[in-house]
Image (cartoon, rainbow, N blue to C red; front, side, top):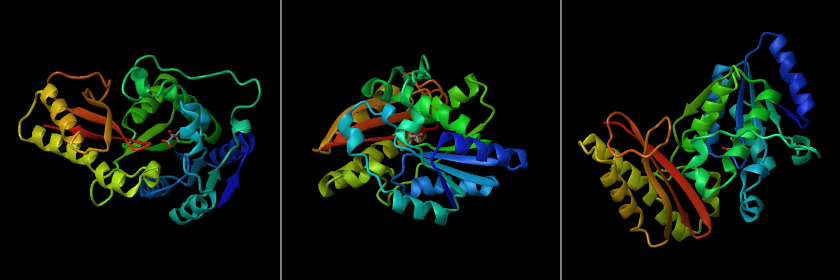
Length: 281
Ligand code: PAF
């Protein structure tokens, strides 16, 4: 396994692999790897000749300095896990390498970021869209792998890849969960034991909504209220948002005609968690 630090070296290496007729898969990460990332890496490994994992805690997608400062980092542990899962190349640039002095270009989407995470974390999706576009042009992947856990992010990345004719396939894989349903997230390690125990209420509320829809509930307002009520049974949960919305546009729905997605965000202590579930009649 190779570790490459500069965008220029990475671009050159990717170009060499492309010229040799090899397919390239990219798993973009911010490190602190867990089983969710490893499922993306394994799929990337299976579907491509060359598996690249980028490891970059992207400062431009954090709207709070304290959140960036306490984001978990473990380069040595991550390298070991990446090697075991079959990564060929880790691309781990520095902040200065990605955003050198004088840097001033951003990628902005007009509609998808206007709600949910986009409202709660102003500038977040501009940071994500910009860094993903850069990672795609640097690593030159044929396929890039994302988790459904960050549902809105996966929609944003799909949209920008289509809008900018990036000629790569965006593969989105299901959320990996703990035994009690909590979605795996790099932030879970920041939860105190009682916060961790209560955090399972997020998936419980979402699973109940899935069951309600399967049982015939089509009223999005009622589903929304039921999810909210369930989350609020956890005394430590501070609810940010609940949305029952169109799975493509993320616009809130009144009635579920076809498919929908429920998205939630809540804080437990100082740790903010998000989750989502597809609601399919
Ligand atoms: O999901 C993440 O870890 C990040 O948002 C990503 C896609 C690596 C961009 O920094």
